[in-house]
Image (cartoon, rainbow, N blue to C red; front, side, top):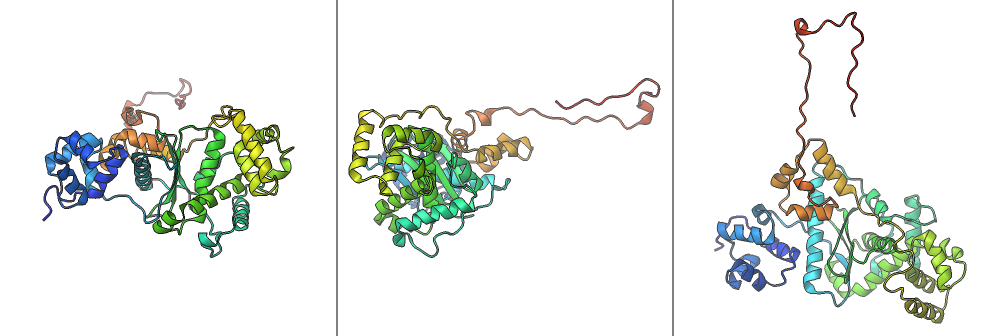
Length: 399
């Protein structure tokens, strides 16, 4: 029989442990000063921590006690993540936990604020990802550009586009260069949530990462967990092909490349905001340049030291998502909820985690709100000063 705190949700313990990059239950047990078997029983759901242990868990994992009593904000859809094979398990688990928290923040915000309606048409025409050919992906990107009225020129802010079409976007530092973006459709409102890494970031990289995750949202919504596990390499290749085709349409981009050299690609980069490396790949994929020419370009690229940083990478500001940030500011500024209300009633995560995922400035929840009191003049006519003959009364102008 299960004992301890009624309503304890064991999955929340695993989620919080991942969010704090605590790899093992033994490590958490050492932090709490308890037997590892106790943490194992809590996480498996056979036992629940008592009130004192729950308080200790909340303190060590930097969440409210109520955090462990609410259901996991998971999704039936898989998470599409791009990570190097050498990425640590604790880092990939951390990324997954942050996506779950992003979806939880989004759901709470939508209790009060209407986010843009989801505007992602079904362009698969009955195809599954296994049936997709490269020509299909090229056509899909053209259909989407037409639907979203983007024309055939550069799309210089994919993050803003994602938010305009109803995606919820977050951007955080992953703490490692081996993790990129993450995409998952949420369970309740079937809305794409995209989490972008801000590590090793430049505008061209942000553009490609955002377009890549858009590709997953468009092409792979119906992919199952098992299919993702089996066909991850092909699914990732399709998303990259989508991003390349979306950012560099064959109908226009190719005709603007003056010559197929690093100098020529660098000249195009200034207008299209796409990295030279991605352009080389695009020209090879379209058979505009032969493989041996592409290989030579890659060698020259590496010899110039551009693998670490390309020319112009630091010249452009990096677009950041703003809808969650603006929504929370609106909730507070309108008087619907105070910051303290949000922390004590709605959110169970640490305020720093919410600020990080929602793009709020550090310390936003600690900022004091001024108390605004509306004053009005007395209505008793006997107390009203005589103004006739003494000039005009001018109201104060709001500043």
